[in-house]
Image (cartoon, rainbow, N blue to C red; front, side, top):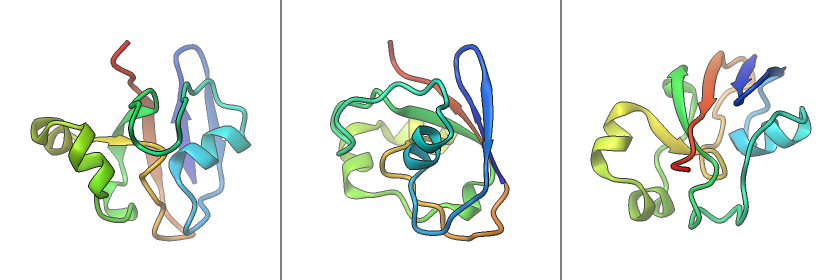
Length: 98
């Protein structure tokens, strides 16, 4: 189960291995801003409150776009954060820069 917390409402989705957090957000019609889907604009920046261990490793695009401190604090780009388990429990908040 993935809980996606947007600015004004939350949605839940069944975790699907190999899909990004952004794909889950779009599928559930979560209030989730994004633009490029390539990891360059960072409009889909999010904070993983729970379940970081159920996401694949940080991508090169995330290393290029996010500060090391942000990654240490649990921030990811939802277009790059790939779910690694169908039975994952993840709670994530949309936290764009602007």
